[in-house]
Each structure stands twice: as structure tokens, then as C-alpha cells.
Amino acid sequence: MEKELGKYLKTDFIGRNLHSFGSLPSTNIEAKKIAKESPEGTVVVSEGQTSGKGRLGRSWVSPKGKGIWMSMILKPNVEARKVASISLVAAAAVSVALKDIGIESGIKWPNDILVDGKKVAGILSEASFQGSLVDYVVLGIGINVNLEEDDFPETLKEKASSLKLVKGHDIDRIKLITSVLNHFEKLYQSFMVGGDLSETIEIVREGSVLKDKQVKILGTSSEKTARVQGIDGEGKLVVKYENGSVENLAYGEVSVRGLDGYI
Ligand code: BT5
Image (cartoon, rainbow, N blue to C red; front, side):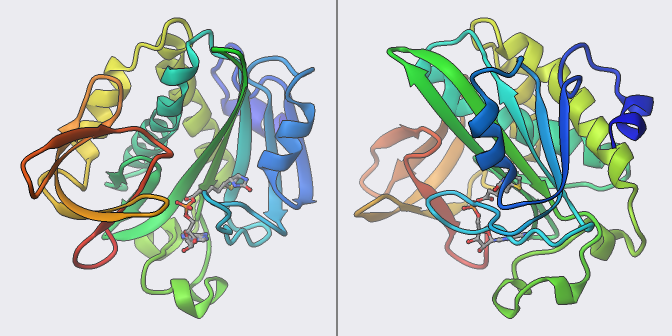
């Protein structure tokens, strides 16, 4: 895969060190194992995952040869509190890469990419800290590229889709991986020193499917209803509760569900 990716890769460092596998439990787990000694931008990619991970202990369906299942190892020089927004950089990169191949997608803050209201990609960032500084981040990206209807379990058929199901034909996974990595590096370069997210946030705001929506905010022990006002300069979701109070929510604190349907 290294050679094929190399044909289209335009990056300085993202994906220049690549570990590719036929099968892994999870590219995030593998990336975490090698994160400390790996250079920034190292990518772990696998044809299939046997225990792909979602957030909060959820699982990610990752059939062999059908999707993009990859994780990047990043070492941004930013304060710990800023690193949560890094998944937005990935969401923006995926969204722009899809646009390049004619697929208009929506971004459901903080980590879902939707087409026609169904999830086609998800992002899982896991960070390790040393004091108030970031040691490394493993940023996992899963994109349902050429999955067929039957590749999804019954429970997911209503809420998940693939690029092939959207477009009606196979999509070149190698070209798409490199496109995501190329776009990611551009957006990440301004984030990696100091945490500038302005370009990412512009893309995320434009694609945001939550704007003005009434949503349920699911915390670890609570559930509240609110209206989404937008995304602030740090990438936090700004919501207004029924009692009028406004809160800026950080990635990882909550899950957001629409009141009707999936988003
Ligand atoms: C995510 O979690 O969306 C993060 C997914 C990250 C996957 C990548 S693949 C490469 C890397 N290595 C890993 O092990 N993981 C990362 P979350 O928001 O928690 O969504 C998980 C939920 O989405 C599940 O509970 C299902 O309902 C649904 N789901 C599972 N597999 C799916 C799929 N292939 N497509 C769409 N939805 C899926």
C-alpha cells in the first residue's frame, strides 16, 4: 500500500511513515502501542478491523477491504485543553475530500460525517498527556467507502451508509485516503503550533447539520434538551437550554442526538 499511496500523497509528514496491515483488532490500539517512539504524522492503516472502536466503548463495524480504517499519530504543541478539537480537523478534512469527489456531506459535531442523514464516517481521537501538555494524540478515522447494505448489521441499516451506496459505484480507496491525508495536513499545520482552528471551523460551520436544531445532550448521568446556536472559536458546541442559559460544550463531554431522527 505504501507505494500506491506514495503516488498521490503530497504531504510533508502526514502518512510519510506508514504501517499497513491486512487485519488488526483496531488501528487506534496499534497506533497507541507505537505512538511514543513514532514520528509525528505516522499512519496505521488496516484492510479490516476485528474490534474497531467507537467513542465511549462503542464498537465500529469495519469489514475487510471495504473501507478506510486508519489512525494518525500526532504530537501537536498545544495545551491539553485545546486538543479535544483535533477531531474537528479530521472531520473537516474528510468533508472536503468527499466534496472533491462530488459528495456533499454534513458534519455532526464533533465527529460524525453524514450523507443524506446517515453516518458514512466517524472519528475517534484519544490523547495522552504529560501534565498540561500533550504527549501524543491518536486520531482514528473510519470511512465507509465500498460497503454494501449487507455489510451493516440490521441495527445500523437505518442510520449508516457508505459512499458506494450514495454514489452507486465503487470509490477508489487509495485516492480517497491520500486526499484525506493531504487535506488534513494543510488544516493541521495551523493547529499544530498553538492550536489555530480558524480554517477548520469555517469548514465545520458550513457543513454543520446541527445549527439551529433542537437536540438532546447526553452527559454521563444526565439528559437535557437544548437548541444549537453554533460552534465557537475553540471548536466547542454552543447550546442554549430551555431555561435560557448558554453553555459551550467540549468534545468528549457529551453526546448529541437530534430529537427527530438520527442527527
Ligand atoms: C465514532 O464513534 O464514530 C468513531 C469511529 C471511529 C472509527 C475509526 S476506524 C479507524 C480507527 N480505529 C478504531 O478502532 N476506530 C477508529 P461513535 O460516535 O461512538 O459512533 C459509534 C456508533 O456508530 C456505534 O455505536 C454504532 O451505532 C455506529 N456505527 C458502528 N459502526 C459503524 C459504521 N461502520 N458506520 C456507521 N455507523 C457505525
